Amino acid sequence: MAPVSTETVIWIVVAVVAVLAVALIVGVVLARRRRISLTDQQEAPKAAGYQAGGAIAFAPAEHPVAERTEVDGQPGVGDDAAVPRDSVKRPLVDVVIPDEVVITPEPGSERVEDEPALDDIEPTSGRLERLRGRLSRSRSTFGTGLLGLLGAGDLDEDSWTEVEDTLLLADLGAATTMEIVEKLRADIVSRGVRSSEDARALLREVLVEKLRPELDRSVRALPHAGGKPAVALVVGVNGVGKTTTTGKLARVLVADGRTVLLGAADTFRAAAADQLQTWGSRVGADTVRGPENGDPASVAFEAVKRGIELGVDTVLIDTAGRLHTKTGLMDELGKVKRVVEKQSEVDEVLLVLDATTGQNGLTQARVFAEVVAITGIVLTKLDGTAKGGIVFQVQRELGVPVKLVGLGEGADDLAPFEPGAFVDALLG
Image (tube, rainbow, N blue to C red; front, side):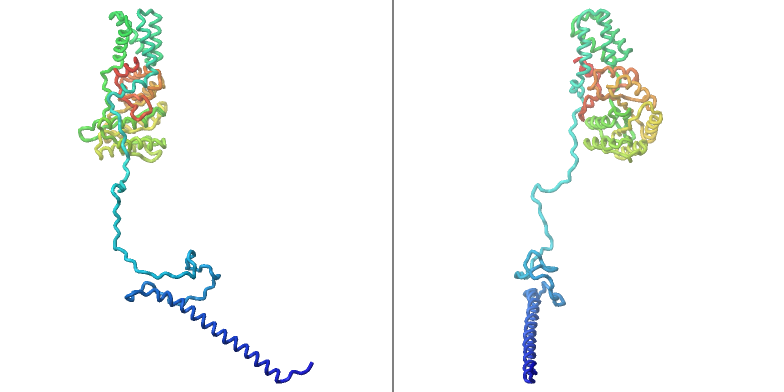
């Protein structure tokens, strides 16, 4: 290989230096243009931020924007993803904001707090007359059975035995049945009864007499002279409908113009207090309740205390159902009454009986009467039995009047008991 001459080496060095010089000049020019472009981007929003009068609406950042590193065309941190980065920026404008914005609602659009709607309650007078159709089962026994026998003319011994059986099946009891039969036999002869109309009139008279219409059947619900409310305890065994009866009784009293407060002393059944409160809210009556499984006597005491403070006419206290055979529970019921009497007299102790239980209901009634001195009977479910004669027997056994009867599940199906209307419903 021939040696390279010195002249050739010099030209190679000059060419390399020239290329490097050109590359350096090009790099400087490009760098300068890039700095100018970045400066223009910073100055543009600054210039747009100044408005007439020199007020500043937008201030640029104190430090220059650093080199962006995101992928070209994608939004960076702080960019609006919905607006392309190369779109024209809108300048800020002054907006006049009022000191206070007043919104005037359209007429009729004002929001009013909802108040619980109170029920319309049927009048209590004449309820038994209106509900007479509910006694159709008992009517088949008295109206069809007895009137058919008595209106047939002269009765022989077999016919009178059939009359006795009819009355016994209707749960009038042996003693009441014998008294009624003896009265009928004597009066039919003395009055010369021959027609079915005469027989009906005689039977009505005898039955009404046995119901003792002279008894006071009003529920004592007027406050005492010292301003203390009347207090009524509602008692009975499990499942007879005490809570429902208490709620319906509140409706009866409110319909008669009384103010009522309810005491939920059945603390052992979880839904009892809620159920009673619902009944009260429908007629505008407050309800005093305690903790679940709490002391019933304490709840009853607080209910009467609250009733005195509010000045209501009547405090109705719903007690827990208890078997008459459980001595401890019956003693607890006596305690409830004694605690209440420390503040106010107990005017009524209403025993709720299920009319469909028949003779078993009488056994319950005797035990309750021994513990808390029953003042009145409420017979529920009378529409569901053919044994309407339980009314006669329970009054005879306890010596206290039937004051109310339940003839259906409706809110106003609790009716004050009226002997005449009841017998008329039985006879049809």
